[in-house]
Length: 244
Length: 198
Ligand SMILES: [Zn+2]
Ligand SMILES: [Zn+2]
Image (tube, rainbow over all chains, first blue to last red; front, side):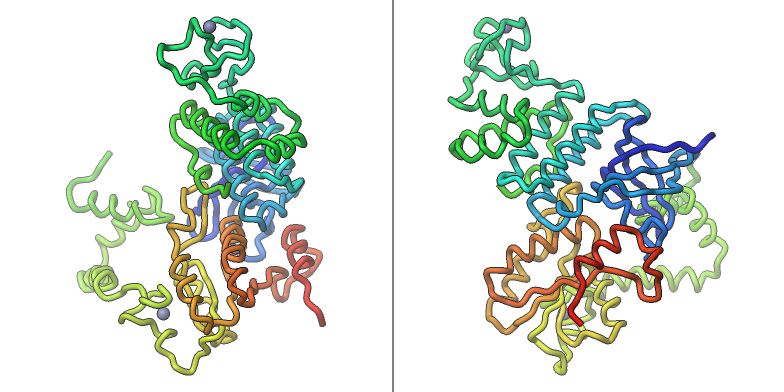
């Protein structure tokens, strides 16, 4: 089997043996790749600090029987600013957790890679409300992973409109005809908030977060969290730890 | 295929240890089968007594044979400087340098959102309690340079800032004896950011 080269972001790492690590990488061309970095925990390893979680690298890998082996790494971007700031670190790691959950091994998914990189860059730009960037990133991640939230039309029958009911299982809004009896309508401002999180340019998130009252933001955040938990099968572990 | 009885039990138990896969567990188990009974007994005793006799120091949460560990019992050490580490083995590593004469606080890990480990799972509350009487004037944060260690350092500095103690972080940078040109850009970048006045 031939060696191959990929741009990738490190999603998580596990210790292996005395000095190795297993890495989960989100690559541009092969989706999730699980690979071994040999000797990476030894001080003075040739990989140095390049293979930490969140690092964007250009890596050469050698296919192995169960896990591929990292043979060379060049750093594209370290996202250092995210590491030394607890709030942004927690947001970034939660995004990596979500990407790790939705990415499939051996399945090319450029949009997922691009989106994760964009969200990390948005966090790096030092937003006033990093948690809003996280929630936006998560909703968009769900969307490119096949769980697009329908926020402009009924998720069942397609009737366009500002429907008041959000249904997790249906994957978005439901019109009065499709909504189950007794379903709780969204509070004022929440639908608009979800649309901002799902669609607005990253740099507009701060403006939304700063002028809306805390209750709307908290409702939106809680809905994003349950939406992800519902479609990923379990809540994201990092989400709860993010200071808000 | 599974082996019969005790040997399979041993393989299963060894396989639960960190860093030991099924193959290594099998290799170790068959090795133990060939050693002297006295050697095997010594290993079994060591495992049993570590569970019976070793506990965590009630002050700093280092490993200890009594209620207080050796460092906490040592009256010649300074109470003014407190070094915060992730694990007891970090205490050993720092003690080996002979550079530090203060006390320790062992957190019992690092904040790791991906594993669901937050500040509440670490001994952060106990750290804040130790700092409440004002005897400590400097806290050295000596967590790892991994993403978890950095997150923990940032979290702690935010929590401790209001207390007015001097906060320091171990310098991260070039390995001693290493050539600058071989350092990776992350390490070199950190060394640059943490440069010191001469
Ligand atoms: Zn409908
Ligand atoms: Zn102690």
